[in-house]
Image (cartoon, one colour):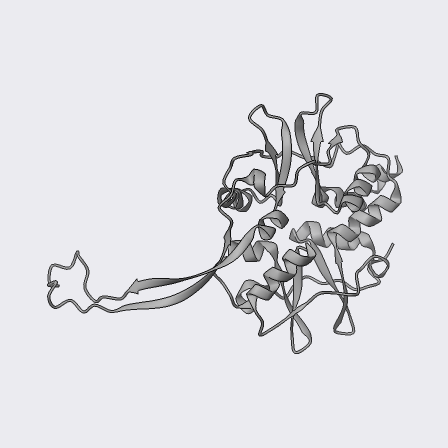
Length: 286
């Protein structure tokens, strides 16, 4: 199973110099998590949803992007792609051949490959993760901060009685964001209130007003932005079955529930792709 057999060749890219707002529109329209950045036709970086959300007031693509992205060759095995994604905590790898980008392979592509393998080993022993949960009335702006602090890409949402009611991800935050333009004022006065030698009458006052453009999350509760009717799996679900569910539903994670339908864990695609790693070969044969 080689990268070339699972990579996407029709890659959406952006060019430097370019517009941050165009990147936001692309991510909203396509639902993808990141785009390669080109300069004069050469790959120079990657911009992701995380970059837009964490650098909300940055507009320059060169400062938004992660430069010198990790890449892979088309004849590399999928196990190498999984190793690179796990080691560098990334979701996509540009595929390079002869110094040019010929495609991209993402975590979703690896999940599709795992679905084809029809693995029957259970998820509960090696692939589920503990998680946080949010109340359905949590403000969306706070959700963004919690995702940033926790490092999670998605968090389940509970009702007051603890019942699972939805899930919120970075993809949903991007869909419920907007560009807000404003003006900020900076004071460059030479004196300060702590300077006993500076009289108010002679203090040099210099102020400058400048325009800002920020990505802002809508002022709504998480229940109005989350995905409802969440697809969940039991603890005894099998790897192949879960990968197929993720692939068909085009989701990056599945809540894991017990017999009482109560949330007990999460299954993230970044954990599931570890089944492709060389040290998991023995497990796959059992």
